[in-house]
Image (cartoon, rainbow, N blue to C red):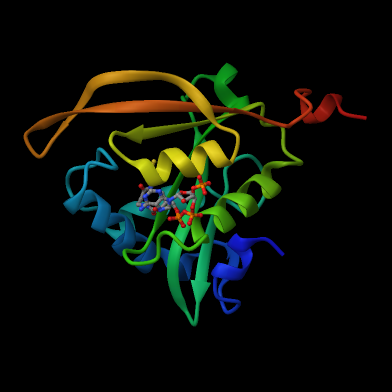
Amino acid sequence: MDQTTTAVSAGIRIRAGEERDLEQLTDLYNHYVTSTPITFDIEPVHPRDRRPWLAGHPDTGRHRLLVAEEADTVLGYATSSPLRPKQAYETSVETSIYLAPGHGGRGLGSRLYRALFEALAGEDVHRAYAAITLPNEASLRLHERFGFRPAGIHREVGRKFGAYWDVAWMEKALPEDGLPAAARP
Ligand SMILES: CC(C)(COP(=O)(O)OP(=O)(O)OC[C@H]1O[C@@H](n2cnc3c(N)ncnc32)[C@H](O)[C@@H]1OP(=O)(O)O)[C@@H](O)C(=O)NCCC(=O)NCCS
């Protein structure tokens, strides 16, 4: 058992996100919408507006939603989502991850990402990308830990709270052997 596993409470369960999580997932996300530049949404979202997002992350396929739950409380979630709409991009996903305030720094993000990449291991996904508004040391380190490498910085690409923000893109090769899932023996 590694240090990360021991640091996170055994009562925390990682599972696919469901309809009943929508309110808590929305509250969690809105915390980052209203008080940080981590996401470039500016107005809080309503749970009903997140239904298509939820439906777009079923428990099979490339686009997943995993939640970390303890005693019916959602402590965080991780997603893999379409990178861009045009079809040739379909083997690339954008991943993102949000923990409830106060739950960072004890291995929960690593647990969620480990589960997400395990879930994607059997899928036809070739690259994962993360867009990280700078500065965000915790996110940069989490992504490095999971094999993401720097893929360039978009300078001052977003404006929020009256300031322009840089976004670092990070890229991870999937699966590890570099072959499409369909081509693996
Ligand atoms: C980013 C986030 C998901 C990381 O999850 P976490 O549970 O805190 O991360 P872990 O405890 O698993 O640690 C992963 C790495 O991040 C580092 N880390 C965690 N919190 C940190 C902090 N506050 N400052 C610096 N590094 C930090 C750990 O030391 C570890 O680094 P290592 O691999 O070099 O040892 C979490 O901090 C979070 O939800 N932040 C707010 C939302 C956010 O920024 N999401 C990402 C958007 S791109």
